[in-house]
Image (cartoon, rainbow, N blue to C red; front, side, top):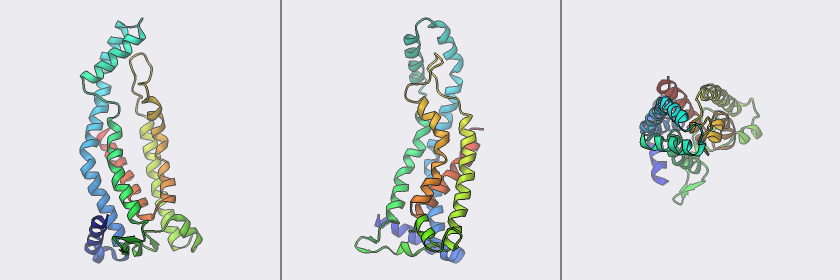
Length: 233
């Protein structure tokens, strides 16, 4: 974690002339963008997977007619078709899973008072008037919701809400993966139905995690919204 702290500090130093007191916040946004660029190939693969599943629908319709009287055999045939065509309904989850380590790294970095036995100087950095190591509760107990730090959080909530609403609308348009009998793929349907609502959990995340981690979440979800709009058009 000390290596990562040094990286953030160096990036903040580079951005200092441009962003001033918010240089470390800019470094976190830049770090998030780098992570998303690294994950982008997985996002493209997920988009190809979704298009491949859509392309399989005519073949699934044929199997449905062939095995109409044997639902168990039909289900097995459809699963074999997915395996043969190398199409996985789980591929869309991989980009999110690969980002979790970066998020937890930021969370622990800005939740620790010391790093390697030394004072964590990153906690002294701010986004405008809001310390990167503080949470929304700290802003509320300080100058209140409409104080300098509180206004920073209100702006972040507004961005998170707008992105969540955009993702919700787009996610609702994605068809559920089916087995060919008209039933959802076992274990996947419930997850797919929940995905649109998960967008709004970013609001809770922003409220309870350190501001640095909240910046990561908002930057990443905004990136996702733009990326999915481009890949799934």
